[in-house]
Image 1 (cartoon, rainbow, N blue to C red):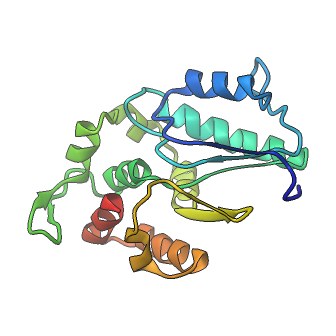
Image 2 (cartoon, rainbow, N blue to C red):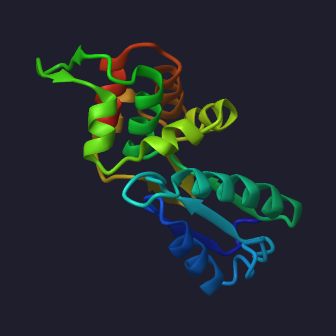
Length: 188
């Protein structure tokens, strides 16, 4: 894969598996069976794989499968962590345990997951391997002089001044049992 390989970027799939596969087919990245046909192309999905649509786990499984298929052809498929990944992961880890955020508000991840259109079936269907995979995704990445990030927030600057520093800080939070820190990340 080279910097001259075609770069495709998508975001906010929100559990809409069919819409994602249709869009990827329309760009020649997958075939009718949702198998990689993009050769050495690069595909980045900028987060928010879950909720609102009922197939968030199917989206995760598709992207993981495509990553392996693309790598075999010299391509690349990966995803960033968006705020809805933080919400689903926080819901799995903390459930309905109450905590107080930095503004003094009582919060529960599971409550906010459902309010944001989350499906409890997705929480149950995610495997531990898929959870670990999501926890290791980046929140930002530089590709061809372009910053790929889920949102246009400057909040990530509070985690560091380089791609590596920000991603390391976020991974540390996602490995922690501190719901308040997770909540701040969700709000970023």
